[in-house]
Image 1 (spheres, rainbow, N blue to C red):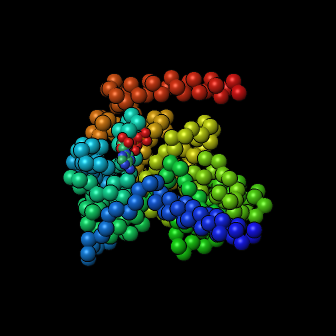
Image 2: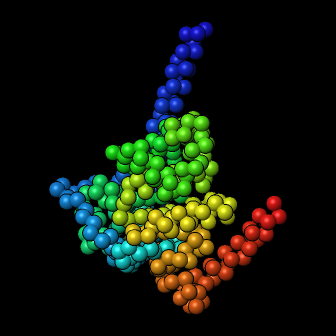
Image 3: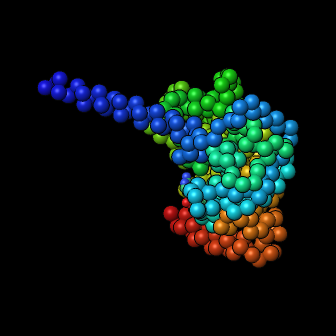
Length: 303
Ligand code: ATP
């Protein structure tokens, strides 16, 4: 009978290994379900980031033939400033982040960083220059220390601890029985959405990239956690060019510029005040979300 079960056992092991492999792959392609489709041109030079200015010039893109998602997007993000991308669900916000990280190449137009077309430079150098705090961080089944250090190959324990402090997760780690050696992920400690995001922030801090993409979580965190994370993000995005893919408008009020995307085009842009005064799509979205926030606050207060 045992012999009968052995193949099943083996199958289980293979299944677990494959699953594990997939999870790690997912973590590597932070922006999820996006295969590395693009390849470097032979002899492509590395990207040299001097200041970190980002431009999209008439960028067009679709995942499938016949369905264009970005229909000629122009963006001009000066070095060291923050730009929030907002707009209705499905407008193409996350697609902008995926193109900047070069998971895909535009079908027309170009994206440049400090004047260099990102399609013409080595992918590895591009990705080394960009830190991503994704919507849903997938953690490796390893220690929390390893998960933070993953941002940089030569990180020391001091680097890890400093990054944890920067991401305000150090006190949480300090009270774990195994501290930085505590196992996390599917087979270890389960972290909350907010804690996982802090690990992603720590990972980004250790990488210390000149460009930052923050893909805000769609799943709601409680308002206190969210505020604490916003403060941390605001701190780490200072002095870097930051692009915030925002699904909730409450988080973008302080951005240097807000770009409103609608059906694959830039519908309007400006500061929060300018856009409210305009009384267009942003003002409309803002009013709608303000009503939702009020309802949430009432519900939270009642708990
Ligand atoms: P949300 O606020 O809901 O996250 P978004 O503005 O970030 O939306 P995107 O994720 O950029 O929107 O998606 C834009 C459009 O592209 C959507 O209609 C979506 O269905 C489609 N899309 C996204 N990813 C893929 C993909 N891998 N393959 C095909 N279509 C996709």
